[in-house]
Length: 219
Image 1 (cartoon, rainbow, N blue to C red):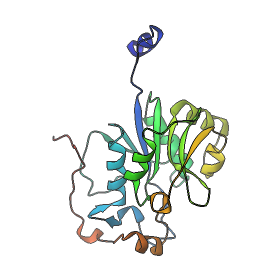
Image 2 (cartoon, rainbow, N blue to C red):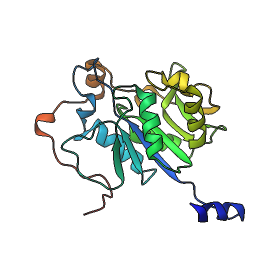
Image 3 (tube, rainbow, N blue to C red):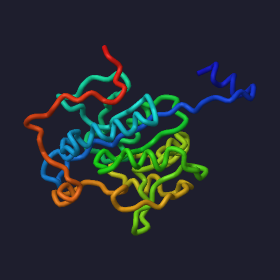
């Protein structure tokens, strides 16, 4: 870290340190079952979100419990919300602490139907002073489909004090972000059984396959 700071002072171009944060807590009460265990095209929603994050960063922090069938990957760590079930902002805070000295963070909801497309659209999109996010077809900001300056998120969370049960809009809504309009299939998330049906998600957790992530480092 000291060498990095010295390089910046000397005007040497330094690649930003990145971390992708996957929000995977919550009770899935509207779905009636753990929605991140639902599968689309042979992979769970959580596997799909992590794989999407790995296309952008080699450091993934999942805010939520590690599934018992999860294949170990040293690039992926799981951290609990603090307090448990304290809401997505509590998850962001816990994951951001685990992200260390990251300069940029990608925030991804774990229940996105198309996380790879989200990352593809935003990976090289121009940022506002604090970040860049998707905007859905109805004009709503999608804060959990966004790439941010990590210090901006740290500052926003610090201004809150208590992060428990705080809405994402309240936490991040003051940030100056560039919005990228996206069609509904890209911004869709899975909250209800009908959402799952539309996305073609199925529940096969009784016979979960063991699937390695792309580019997984072999032990």
